[in-house]
Length: 601
Ligand code: AGP
Image 1 (cartoon, rainbow, N blue to C red):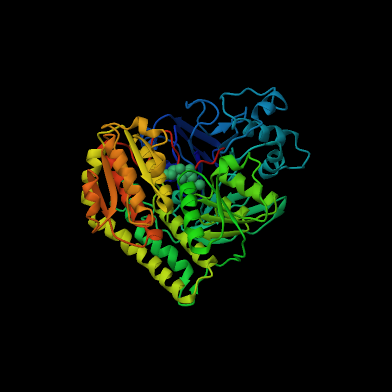
Image 2: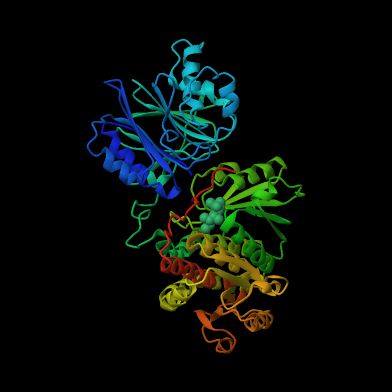
């Protein structure tokens, strides 16, 4: 996704802007640009590049660019190919108004052919209509001494689509910002303020953050922040972000992803701590439900699928699960369901749309997310925060694990089980961090060995049953998105209905074989797979010696009750994906073509 940053203060803006952009590189980008303006000299200096931020920094190291107001942008192309001319910031015809934007202006062509038909456009982007519209509005404005903010406010209703905007203007000693359907935060400093798409961009400067809300417009100066919504001034809460910048840095690991897998035990502890206390289990929201619909995308969708098994097993409450991108355009019958949107970023466009649709149908909505103040939390009636901490690697890992933990908490909250049984289940849950840690500490060397073997192949299957079927699907997604191996997840009992045709000695199968009530059935499936010549790597419990007779390789996980086995199994599969991608020399944290948060449909 695009990333936007801004600075207004008393220090030189250029390096601050460049550093902020570097901290949000993980959002994925194909070009970038910066602008500084010196409100004394009335000069605007801009530079765009197709290179990395580091290269841009180098190119500008001797630049004469000086100014205390600046904006920056990393572009993930949606309209207009990646190129310097399409890189932001974009300007009006006089070169006096500059805009950086994250989102999509859906009616840009209409504007170009309508009110802006006499403008000369220098790019193919949708964004470029914005500065032209602001310029035109200022010129035409009927408001006496219209300010830049007035002009921005007048323009926004003409823009259809999504935007997080920062607007700079020659001679103006501040920045005007606005957001609709794209995240935007203000970092509050001392006689300086920061603006960014995401918190890691400002964390090395301040941990005081204001999350702008839908429809907010703000005027940010070095010593003032004015926010309005619907033309009336509003106050937004300043939140102290608990993350240090080190949290958001790699902490000594080669990749964010490995750091974040190793943080899975702590993420579980932090999430449980938020809802389990001496007084028992409290999710902090009304949970009178007859049935649940979970909507999500990608890895979060697999955590929802796993959540279905967990909640139905523990609480016997029916759970349906839909891909958000499908649900949004389906005739799904929403009668009296609680709709839960699972989204790590809280910004996934498909999932936000699903939340809005559920609200239109009068459903009670809950967001399950990792990001404080994200858009999903503003749309949903309630929010359950998972506490994974910043997850920078594009591949979701610890956020997935704590999404599963949330399903256990939901299942236990909804269950009417006797007190004694509830205590035992909660005790099981509290053991999960330790089980996750056992996999990381005790099995990593073997997993690295199996990964070196797996890295030689180009086609891999993952199979599981019951509560571990979604874990097989997640294992396949994790492997494919960072190692570029074609991996497919399947129900173990389903492979014989077609995919068997693909089995050869060159298609290893990862089989989740932790003990449950269908272990024998899954073992039969594994024997069928072996009979067709495919090598099998089993994910099996420590102490299960039986399994070694039927498979080629084994990755061991600590024994636990079947319903909790997804936790250690997931840790093993996340590590397997990481080490396989490492063995193949892949990028890992920023896989090709992917973004951490997909804020467009
Ligand atoms: C997961 O590894 C992927 N990065 C992707 O599938 C992701 O889970 C999906 O885009 C949903 O993101 P969200 O949880 O932030 O909504």
